[in-house]
Image 1 (cartoon, rainbow, N blue to C red):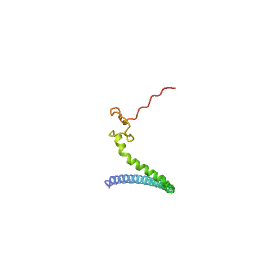
Image 2 (cartoon, one colour):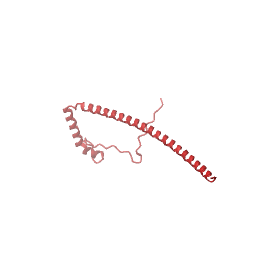
Image 3 (cartoon, rainbow, N blue to C red):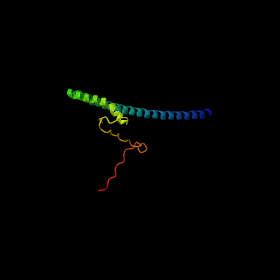
Image 4 (cartoon, helix red, strand yellow):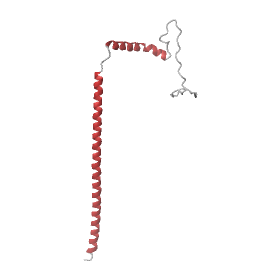
Length: 140
């Protein structure tokens, strides 16, 4: 019988240790559960806020679309004038293109006028893609 008492004490110690670990695990599980519940509530709040924000944006877009639909088109004679302007611009592009590429005379030069010179481009060494320096101001 004396041999079984130490074994029983050892088993009781192990049992107590197991019960202690079980209690610790249960406590951690409960705290994790509470944390997950809080995170779910927070995500729900954020989701509702995003839904409200999206609904507001959709309403604003709808109002803008309605305003744009309600606008009147320009008068027909103004549309015709604008169309003729863009046709003339497109027709004059080749002449200006030659001039701007320094391959031809100025488009408005007549036969009796001396040809205009194209503006000189800045030298490549000076131009490094930087904006021009501001002019120095004198103190007043």
